[in-house]
Image (cartoon, rainbow, N blue to C red; front, side, top):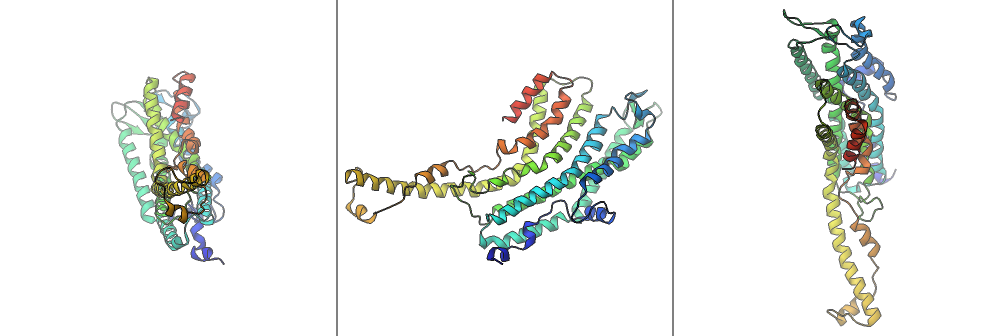
Length: 398
């Protein structure tokens, strides 16, 4: 076993984002998944069935029609499709991709190795702490409590609406919630919010881990061909969340569309909405990646200072070899002290190109597109497609 292997426990490179926690253990006991098989597709179908298909059955036969005698039918409810079908399915399906890609990034950081040997123990402690946070019972209880709170707000809202739908029957005597509506409020709404908040919590745990790694002693090099000091591979980790972001974007977009069904706002307002949502999504990933800006900026500053000094010595030496002396500040002692020095020109040019920002447009293009796609599709039903396409291109090129 090498010193590096001895310094970092095996679990340091085995951060499994989808494992651990009370909800995982519950699914394990119900045999919905196994330690080495998340069965994401199977579980996605089960949760979609609970959240979306059961209310569909409970609202039969009206749910078979796109119309409803007094209001919105189940199949025409964009909110139900966005939250209980697409989003919940996406949250579960994304677990496998997130876990695999995050583990690969951490393994690469260990095997490169980016982490200096003096920081192995600290890195192991950071991962162990992240695993404890991932498994937190309190965190999942809070997520569930917030999901129940959201359901209570939805129940109160149903008693105030003045339009009947598959979920509620409105009348002058008072509103009454249908059986399908009660199932949605008791099961579907809490499940949606729990899965969304649980996924966001686990990303926050990963974010804290990255920020702790950023504060360790890192083996960065200013001339690395990735232009990021050797940690450029971390820049595209947000794309592990493409499916998750698409799911939550569908929920947000359909919620917005449900409130503007009568009249679509101007394309400029849609652009502001989409741009604002894109900033929120990118901010989610800027938080952990931004922690590496400081060590990269310090690396560039220190490297440029040394390379500039060496370039001065090399060029003065070259000048003396060509014309026999230095034009400025000619010194016999300098000529005797500096006999030979390597040309730092290539290293200097490479260091000048070093970027302190890991969050780049090209690396985030896929996840940005996933965030905007649901809004673009819904906007295209009310606004000319060319205008929507032009808006999306502009936002992706920001």
